[in-house]
Image (cartoon, rainbow, N blue to C red; front, side, top):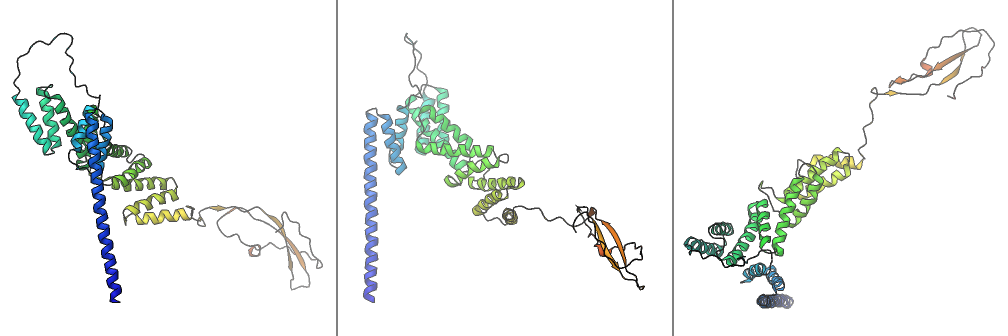
Length: 365
């Protein structure tokens, strides 16, 4: 028994050791692959193959967002490889008139501040600093400032979307980035999330089925994305489901309404919704049939029947009389119709021998 346990323990230890070694080798292999892609991207950049270089740097960042130098080189590639911004200055056919050398000390100071903010990843402050510098001297170190502004706007936009809930501001910053160069794939995803949220809110409370459509996508991809209201996408999705369920219930679509309520309860078990869910489920199962009308509230109609009734009466005298009584049933309120035996007929005895009278009926009783 002890030998078996020892053998099993050794097997487990060996398996864990082999798994750790495999993971280590895989990490080394991935690291070598990323370094190879980065080096090839550098060669493509130097050769002017900016589109291929961009793809390589994006791949490296997708695998390792903190890979040294990859983000800076992606920014360089996007700026240099794009024709969205014309960095040349049109000086015309004649040489410019010599101007006195401007005092560049304020610009130099702002540029130094911008470099510090870039190192500290103070993206919003970086954008403000560069804007201030451009107001002082639009031609100051244009290429370098374009690169810094590109990074500042990109990360400022993403920060506003993911952290601040300022979706509109984030989308605007990323739109400015596209003036410099196409957005990378990661920034495009964040931009699309923000737009989906904004579109879903635009239908809020008016077209709940459309809100459900847009927030259902965000509930799985970005459940904690929020706007300035502080409401997460997953909560928007649940409330939109309840709104849609209410609308469907009002239109008599009980089974579809039940599906919406059930999905909402699956996201968060809300005891306040449970009675509504049970009621809607019952309506769905039984077809939402109307209750049976109460007697006395409606008029019951019966067909008019004319019939002849034969009564044989034997009085104390030895005479048998036959009487003929005609009854007519009419429409009445929901009150039980008395049977023929409960009616006291007017009897006019006619002395005659015992005989049977064949009835004449309007309809067969």
